[in-house]
Every structure is written in C-alpha cells, then in structure tokens.
Image (cartoon, rainbow, N blue to C red; front, side, top):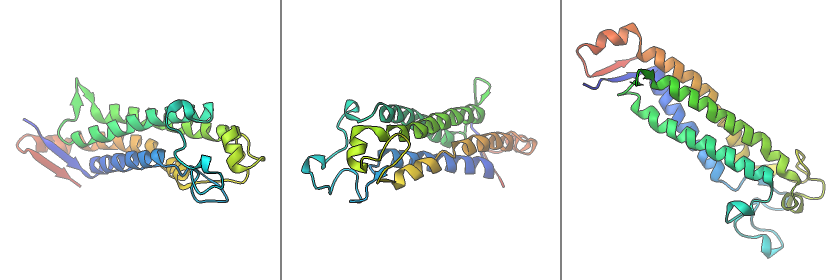
Amino acid sequence: MCHVIVTCRSMLWTLLSIVVASTELIAFMSADWLTGVASESPTCNLPDETLCGPYAENFNEIASGFWQATAIFLALGIMIRCAMAFVSVFTMCVQSIMEKSIFNVCGLLQAIAGLFLMLGLILYPAGWGCQKAISYCGPHASAYKLGDCSLGWAFYTAIGSTITFICAVFSAQAEIATSSDKVQEEIEGENLICFL
C-alpha cells in the first residue's frame, strides 16, 4: 500500500528543486551571458552582418576551450538537477529504494550537481580571452577581464541558481520530517498524511 506523506519541509524541498532546476536550464539556454556596449544582444545588431545569427551551431564552433568545458559542466549539473527535480515529486509516495533514503541520495546528487555548476561558472570567465570575445568586447578583454562588455542576466541567474547546496540541506530536513515518529504513527491507518 502506498502512503502519500507530505510535510512542509518535503514540499519546500520539492518546489525549490523544481524552481532552481528550471531557472538554471533557462539561464543555460539563453544567449545573454555576455553583453556588449553597442547592443543588447551578443549575437545580433552589430555593424558586421557576418556576426549576426546563432553563436554556435554545434559544439566545435564554441569559440573557447574554456567555454566548451563550461558547457559540459553546466549541462551535467543541469541534467542531474532536472532528474532530481523529477524524482523529488515522487518522494511523496516512495521515501526509500533498497533501504536507502531517496531524500539523502537526491541531496547528495544535488550537491554534486552544484559542484559541476560552480566549476562551469568559474571556467566561463577564463574564455573571455578568446578571439571572438576580444572582437566583441574590445582589445582589453582577456581571461577574467571583461574589457568593454558586461555580464548579462543569464550569468547572474546561473550564479543565483547554484543554491543547489541549499536544496541538499533541505533534502536532509525533508528526510527528518517524513521519517519522524509522528508520521510513523499516522502511517498505520491512513493513505494520505499531511503535517505542517
């Protein structure tokens, strides 16, 4: 028999996991990581028509090895985050698999995803010295130095979304809340258990 267990802490963890994974995915898919002085968009509205269009059509066209590494680490972190957001919804019905707490496993994976995301965000500025960034941001642009550009909203959103570590802490709190003595007493006769 399946018991649906909902506590404030488990619901908060689930909602936070979904929101943060969605936010990180939106930031990753955006082109607004680097903003030039002359235009709002890093891919268009420049005097040279050849610069107008998508930044890169495939992975090999990404201008810097550092940016390629950033894309890999961010993609890995986001895939883990999205999977954990999906799994977090089902923790209301299933709290353990093979006698391992799903909350603890998800929390560990969310912490690993946070490390991948942080590593990607640290590597991103190292790519500012590539030729494409220099042509866009001016001759003073170099690794970890923006030149005439500024950071776009997507970069700041990605930094804000690294609150994955908070999700990992909330997963431990959700585990404590759903396995408390109070919840275990209620499991005996009911299918839906809600606690504030």
